[in-house]
Length: 203
Length: 335
View (cartoon, each protein chain N blue to C red):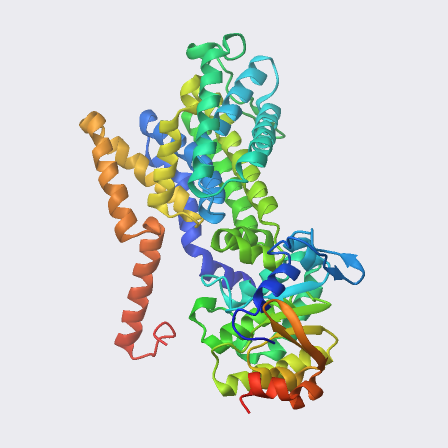
């Protein structure tokens, strides 16, 4: 977590290969990935759900999900199984599967963006500010689903401005300021940390 | 049950097919039939252009260049004694192979830069065709190209292509084949990736699509069909000249595509046939007919950017909503 301009989104985009680092390396499961193209990184099991609910607005919900499984397009039976799971996580997506993605509400669009990222069956899901600009009720629903995704065996790497939610559903937290980690530790401890409380929880 | 449903959903297509098959009987004039046949050849080329321009969103202006490669390929190979049925796929593959190497550098550019780079390639092809006298016959081109070889059929005997009607059916067959391939392609996950790249290249990458490879694939397939159309054109016209690589020809296809509806399957075919018919009926205006097309293109860009097909779809939707309001059923389109 970190405030505006701390470098959260830049970090996420660099990990996903959309941006290239000037120096340093990024390793995933012992493999250097910072020179790979975004599509190679996805097929290695790292999937980004980008900030701001980016979808293909003219395409239907179903087709957006299908595109998420592009790297697995040779195994359609498995893709269908994953899609069933995504529909279970977000039943509203199933109801609206033939509707253009651009006509969904903000919360539904975020659910679709998460669902699409899950379609590639990632080892690790990069979730960039999934609760930005959403109603409190929707935020709670998304938080529940993130925990469920994690329980199902996918590592979730979450970035949030909403520190409260972030620390409630995660195991470990890192505080980013000006592109550097200034604080890290188990989430319950950070929740009690005086600096975090003052700067991010408004207590 | 399933079959009944199939007919209930697809009957407009069956009517169209019956109509297409009846065309030689409905238009006995050799001239009219020739115009329709050539429009269908151009429709195949426009369908190819539709893949790269309509679905993938890359404005390629090299299409006439690949059409010319297909045309000259079939001209040279059949004159050398090769069967049309072998020369056609070989020429189309040649066009596809050339487009692969043209695409490698040019597809790294975007937007108008890609349009200019591909336009350059089209011009180069027409200059080479006009100047490489020993190979292409220079500006006179190649004449005396044989018609497609007759197909031997068991029982019914041979089917030749001397009559205009037979030539029409030949082209119709290729057009339907092209439509079938395009239909399968654009409705596959691979086809979806073309649209994804058109929509948002960066997001497509984040989803796991290699945008460059996707554009290259679309470009190569588009050029393959340009080559097919060129090859058929050469064999039916019996001659080729550097005109087949001309910019005019290609801009015609762009107009067919934009007026018909880019990014749809029906659009290129509807556009090609409608505009060709219009061109024929505006013959009396001579070169002033370009004024009509200019005005039409501007009007289409402003009032129906999705072309004729988009206009019909939007109209159909309005009619359905109106009808449901009349009978008092709440429409799902209003929600």
